[in-house]
Length: 330
Image (cartoon, rainbow, N blue to C red):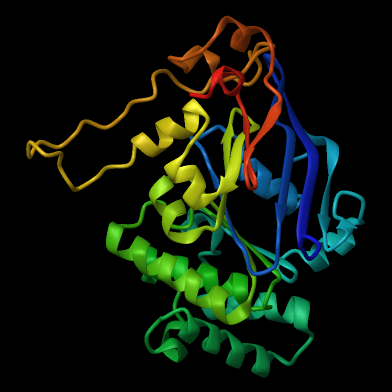
């Protein structure tokens, strides 16, 4: 197998808070290969976005810091390079689509000018050529009359169109890695499907690897080949999407899958109730020594509350951190 495009090893990210040090990512290992779509799924507060910000080296310092680990892009450790080198990497080798485009796009510049700025920063071409490429990118992401829309401002566009602009900006310099952080948040279902189809089409054309961050297992099933399930800053399960969806081994993964609505009813004609995961993600300053999911897990053993479970291999590329595996699995 070829070497990973991106390899994260033993990543630990900490934040200083009034209640003490919060470990928002703890011991995270992730590998991503060229042309692959990797999903990262979990509830809010589980460390998904912080993983993306760590890759981009945008963790706010202070109060945050990357305390330990390596993040290697094609063998280059991004945590060891200069800030000047990281500015060259961001938007060029690695691009990111943020959750809310209205807060990411500058309201006082046209969308065309904002794409042009990205191209000029990394490509070194003329402004005329950069503008031509900006219009081409708007056309590529399905925006009608792009030569006109390029002169418009973010507030003149719908949420779906602004998200398409963000995708156009992220892909303008043909990155090797695209991070999509909840790219369909606040969009209606029809537009969500269009955005996902657009990402898959563009990925097929450019060959870029994609990290898709979401809380929606339905989106993961449609988009990704592999998935990493995170909880309270830790990876609790990882494996091929088909394997995870049909044979989840961690109770948290099972809960996330059970939360996905289904249109089909059971044999009696009644729709089955959705599964509920009791409780909420605990404060990261108050995690105990055991599994962080134990207080919410209906199958938790006494051992789960006292010791952190190791990572166990349960199938081809399928790993899980759960003490229940030793007791014939959940």
